[in-house]
Image (cartoon, rainbow, N blue to C red; front, side, top):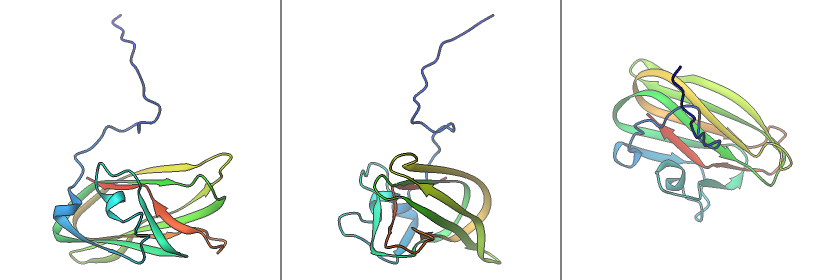
Length: 156
């Protein structure tokens, strides 16, 4: 029997890193609000540390409009919340070709400072010609004054 002992980094996803799209070169981003200390580039571009935060409470939208249709196979979303207990809901939608505003996923997540403070979602998709990808975030379905945020959004 051949055997190897491997080192597993617990923080890594169970999926290997992908060839993430260079969104800076491929798309225009629209955002419903933005805290100037946490710009959207910090969530979309590799090497940025702070992530994006809204400047206003309530539902927010991040929309990527691609210069040319893109084939998407993987969408990774990384949300962090270490201070406020809340239930967040997000919806991913795509448009392209004869498809307009089609839901990919709608999901809720409970954040708790004393328990779960991060959510990393890897969505395997088969979207052949995406022209628009929209992430809608309701930071607190109980309508308290929570701010929407995302640490990282990567597409492959």
